[in-house]
Image (cartoon, rainbow, N blue to C red; front, side, top):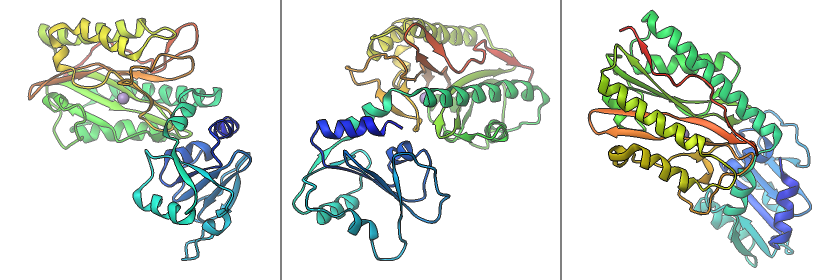
Length: 350
Ligand SMILES: [Mn+2]
């Protein structure tokens, strides 16, 4: 990954050492795996990672691999200790108080600085390899949804959990992983945006699925809605309005437009329903399913090779919930929707 660029950042900020502790996803980013435990140290000249023998050894370029001992001898502490490390960078967004106390004891004379922003910015723009992984994750996600539309009419899936397991099995059968626990929400359950997939039986109405594959550590995120039975004119109108709002935001994506501006476009289109759109329009994604850019940050703008989601929703408490979500990227000339599966409202015989 962009370790040289990060070392450049450390030089510019006059940081002698950056330390990362498990389970900081930044470690996963730099070593391109999910370790059981790890400590990562990066200085402007040298990068080292300590891993336990619980995991398979990763093939690392530009990072020296050490063994992290399981006994009480904290070998990494001895190996890392040095009086020359005056300014130490820590990722406040992931560090526990216990870890911080340990570092403070280890380096009593050093000063500490928060590098959350530096790390987030580094990970925001993706390399060609990272984009390829995200695209593949999105392709598998789209395929899984397509398979679900073929499976539902067979009536083998009875509950929300059946639907979630079908999607997750499909993805894993393709050799990929799950980016996050699948949300399958039947009818009024979808009025809770983060509904916990349950044993609720499938019945007539909207069925929402929010899920994603993870390919080589990189996430996809997509939400689609199906209709079991035949939607009423009103139900169709809700869906059409939401889709129009989502497409208007997607079609407005261009270099430098702020995410806040996209959010405004959606809320305007939703009109009287905008007060029922109770969350952020989207988020960046990569090693983590939610990462920078954070849409509520007014400074954040669309930039080349920074993938993100657009996911407006309408939630009528106790009644119904709709959300349509795509993962997309601005390639410098045009917006590319990576989750390519259809957004026509599919009505399944029920
Ligand atoms: Mn999302």
